[in-house]
Each structure stands twice: as structure tokens, then as C-alpha cells.
Length: 224
Ligand SMILES: *[C@@H]1O[C@H](CO)[C@@H](O)[C@H](O)[C@H]1NC(C)=O
Ligand SMILES: *[C@@H]1O[C@H](CO)[C@@H](O)[C@H](O)[C@H]1NC(C)=O
Ligand SMILES: *[C@@H]1O[C@H](CO)[C@@H](O)[C@H](O)[C@H]1NC(C)=O
Ligand SMILES: *[C@@H]1O[C@H](CO)[C@@H](O)[C@H](O)[C@H]1NC(C)=O
Ligand SMILES: *[C@@H]1O[C@H](CO)[C@@H](O)[C@H](O)[C@H]1NC(C)=O
Image 1 (cartoon, rainbow, N blue to C red):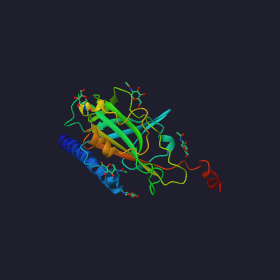
Image 2 (cartoon, rainbow, N blue to C red; image 1 turned 90 degrees about the vertical axis):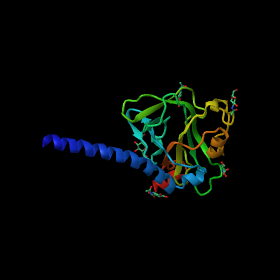
Image 3 (cartoon, rainbow, N blue to C red; image 1 turned 135 degrees about the vertical axis):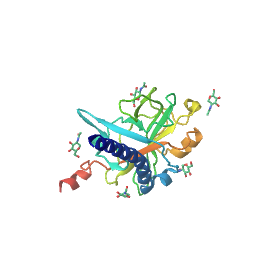
Image 4 (cartoon, rainbow, N blue to C red; image 1 turned 45 degrees about the vertical axis):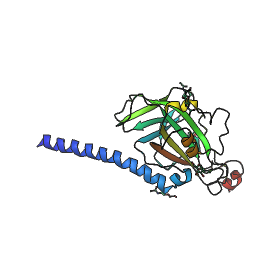
């Protein structure tokens, strides 16, 4: 009887674990759709995996990202760490590209300088990872665009910062569209992906960050 109970317990927790994993990809996709990200970025977003993004915090626990979460700006200093969850169909020799863009600059209502490129890194590889199913991504080279902390201007609504993971084609290191001197403004991830043969993203997530509550001009209003 005891063993049967234990077996059922294990089975139930295994099933709910699997369901939670499956549902999460669907939840991320739904969150992207709800936030109008596929149409605003002109991408097809049908993720096969979960992209786990975590922001290290000095002297505190790292902050994990769930799709669409709003983070206080001071938790987004970064650079963030990346991992993939769900490992079927991933080869250990595969290289990956991670891109982060803000489609809401300077404001979501009038995004005239969008997209801002907040990160572009290539040559990410899977490491075996401490947790089953979670594979940390390590970069073998310096990023093409270093992590740029979200800084929405005072008075703006929160911006969306979208993280996308792509399989890296063999000839990606030839690309010259983005170099260390290319402006981060007026970037277009879908035209960049088309030009460099990245294909559709295989995973992604996003955060929202609002302007610091008491910055500069806002300070007077905040003190009232
Ligand atoms: C959908 O988006 C709205 C904002 O546009 C947000 O308030 C709401 O929480 C989102 N719902 C889900 C399920 O993500
Ligand atoms: C971030 O800012 C909030 C106030 O907006 C403050 O309460 C919190 O301690 C700050 N966190 C860090 C890590 O500085
Ligand atoms: C990986 O990227 C970080 C910044 O995001 C950089 O500091 C580091 O040097 C890179 N690693 C290698 C091996 O280039
Ligand atoms: C990258 O370089 C290789 C070898 O030099 C070449 O065969 C390939 O066509 C190049 N790809 C692009 C996208 O420029
Ligand atoms: C970005 O590129 C896509 C084509 O990949 C195009 O449809 C779209 O209009 C471009 N967006 C902007 C803001 O230029």
C-alpha cells in the first residue's frame, strides 16, 4: 500500500512536471502574442525551448525572468546569464546567437528610434549544467553588442525588452552588419535575422522596465 502510494505520488509529480514544462512554452508564446511582440518585431515566434534569463545581483540571489515580468531598473544592471530548458533536439556542438531589443524607444506610443539593440552575442554553447533539463549557455567570444541596461526616459510607459535565441549558422561570424561601432538605434532584428540566415527564433522571453520613479524631472512630482 505504502509503495503503491509512493509510486502514484512519483507518477503524479512526474506528469505535472512534464505538463508544467510543456505549458511553459505555450505560456511564453501566449505572453508574446498578448504583448504584440511577434507583429511589432516582424518575427514568427513558435518556441521549441525555454530561454531562461537571470540577472545577477551583487550580494543577493539572482533574479530569474518569467515572460512579461516587470523588473525594477536597478535589478537589470546585468549582464544577464542565459540557459536553455528542454534538451531534446539540441546538439552539444551547436552555437547560438542571443539578441535583446527594445521596440518601445523612446516611448511605446512613438517608437521612432526603435529598435534599440540591448545585446547581441554569438558563439554561445551549451554546457552540461547542474540541473536536469537546464543547460547554461556560455559565450566563447565577446558580444557584438555588450549588454546595455534598460533606461527608458522619464515620463515614458514601461518598455518591453525582448530576448531571442537563434541557432547560429556556420557563416555567421562573417557578418558585418553589426560591429562594435554600429549604432544601437534603429536596429531591426527581423531584417538582421534574414540577412544573416538566423531563421526563426527557437526560444525567447521578455521583461518590462519602467523609468526610475524619482529621476531628475520626475523627482519634484515624486516628492509631492
Ligand atoms: C496581457 O497584456 C496586458 C497589457 O497589455 C497585461 O496587463 C496582461 O497582464 C497580459 N496578460 C497576460 C496573460 O499576459
Ligand atoms: C532598487 O530600488 C528600490 C526602490 O526603487 C529599492 O527599494 C531597492 O533596495 C533597490 N535595490 C537595489 C538592489 O539597489
Ligand atoms: C562573454 O561575455 C561577457 C559579457 O557579456 C564578456 O565579459 C566575456 O569576456 C565573454 N567571454 C569570452 C570568453 O569572450
Ligand atoms: C562566409 O565566408 C565563407 C568563406 O570565406 C563563404 O563561403 C561564405 O559565403 C560567407 N558567407 C557570408 C554570409 O558572407
Ligand atoms: C523590419 O524589417 C522587416 C522585414 O524583415 C520589415 O517588414 C519591417 O517593416 C522593418 N521594420 C522597421 C521598423 O523598419
